[in-house]
Image (cartoon, rainbow, N blue to C red; front, top):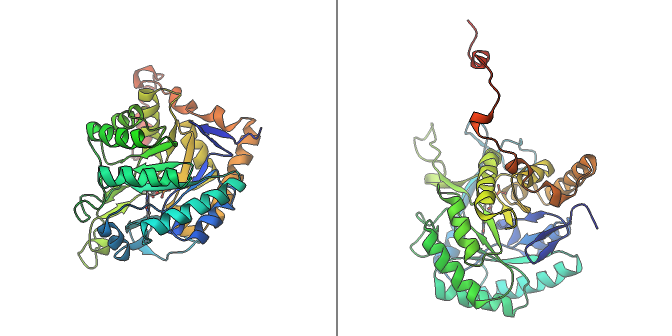
Length: 348
Ligand SMILES: Cc1cc2nc3c(=O)[nH]c(=O)nc-3n(C[C@H](O)[C@H](O)[C@H](O)COP(=O)(O)O)c2cc1C
């Protein structure tokens, strides 16, 4: 058995790296290129029945920012601290075309011992349940249900949703769970102080893995034009979000129990980041915007860095899960370091 293999509920992944949903996974060619990097799974660009959500893609804009909040060129040579700010929408394909393509790509993934995961963005219960049934009937093996896009407050009413109430999470996930029997992963918002509670609600209602946590809304004022960058509130995330993702993972692990699979998203861009997120409690790790920016090779590079790390540490991927989370101590349990703070202030 390979050191990298991992079990996420009923799904056996050949390794914990998942290509997460974004624009580079709209076209079949993009999904194929991601699958051929050797990742454990690829989550395709999401869909739902909302025309407004489709329209939003055609109004989407993307930018890359540096540490001085300046726009920098969008290319693979961008520094590691560059991050993506954007407005996005859902796949431009019709639901039927998306479904056929995803089913075909999941059959192809099977030959590569990988998965092409369908992704639905919740808009309302009846149509989501109906689409989930069609995903299952099409033979697709895993469904990810995103109930926490960052954009609900900004988008047209009913286009997408950012579920912030555990009660609503229970209602939505239970409805979908009741309708289909395929493995169901639920992706939740990071825009809440209740992320572990939302994860718990999603898990208890039948989510077999909780993908956490979605990007945040942010506003970046432009000092030259006095306007917000790209004219409005944007979805933001990047390498700087890794500690927050890890904190949510650790808290969710404590709340849900070590046996409940968590999947990390938001802030991973290397093989060592996969390890960091697993040490915080993730069973698998998604990588999205860095791949859209730097290309599919980033996935193979991250995978080989992760595999070298496992070999060097003589450890298997499952043995990493939650190690850092479980060794957290209280502040009071820390050793006394009298007047240590003096070493961290400007010298006279
Ligand atoms: C341009 C763009 C489009 C995205 N589209 C989707 C989507 O259709 N469905 C979805 O579940 N997440 C979508 N996401 C969210 C990503 O899958 C991911 O959760 C988020 O970007 C944080 O992870 P990262 O740091 O690896 O990018 C999108 C993100 C970006 C930047």
